[in-house]
Length: 433
Image (spheres, helix red, strand yellow):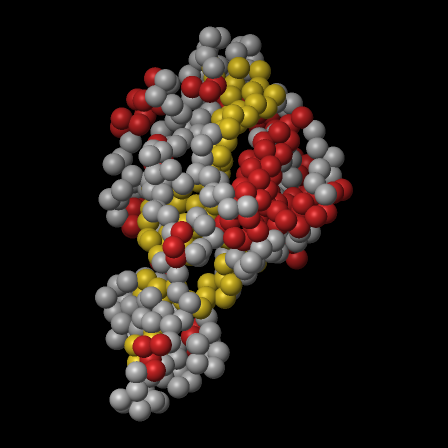
């Protein structure tokens, strides 16, 4: 468990906090590209890392992300006019381009050069995989962008989602990397029925077989391997055949988790990403390449995570996540539909910021412990002048992959997702590029 002081250190991400300073040194997704779909479209409010910002797409199609408040007298630029390559404050007409530079000051004398001295806080932007990414750290420390997906794939081929989570980012992220809870929280009763489909052999089992192994082997053995970008870890379970089923996931610092997928043909994707909105709320981003647009939900939607007109999840604490007790008795473990909704129900039930000094960790919490250690150490090192980890662009970021196979007797899970794994090499060779 953490002390109260360590918990505060881990959870607080506002301007000037050690963890906030660490997160600001990486490129982070902050919104969907589809939220600013067209040149000169309406500005959009963005709240991230406890900062209130406004996003817009200018006449030339370039995206901008600037402080929500006009540097003149603080009026909100959300009410501004997005026109002629800039956003214009409706209070006195001051206008800013995507870099934050004031380019027009119509209420000042025409001969004045005052506008050249005024610049709103603005953050650099990259658009990739249907997401808008921002770098919010010191400009002199700005790293090059890490491409987690193959380059050159059009934005409209990505299914990007953004879902609000009503608790601290660490709570939700810890749920993502926890491979023990899937034996309980996400189980349907049919998963407990034995499966005999011939896939309990070395290689990729069927989804039904994976679900049965998850349901029947409920105390996995966890092993963690540190990497240059964060860590990989394996939840090892005994398959009915006596072979070892492994659920290998990886965490990329600071907030990207590639959760194991039992389907070997999974498309390129951005790992689940928990970006703090503020200290008591966060955004959950993901993006997956889709080859058949007819099956793609509308932007920002996932069939099990429908949002209302205000952008709130329809399943949340104030309606008990639409819990169905009869379904809980006869259908699944929780009575709550949707894997992610089940996650939200338990992580948000801990309160906005969980007091980790009260917890009691077990052997299956090894990856959660490592996550906390790496984040706290990285933030502490940054305070001492040591640069953040995981910035090496020589890493093949677009080849990072989680796995969920059954291992042959002689196989080591540490080869999974590497060039030493024949299955991985075959999949990478046919991956979209």
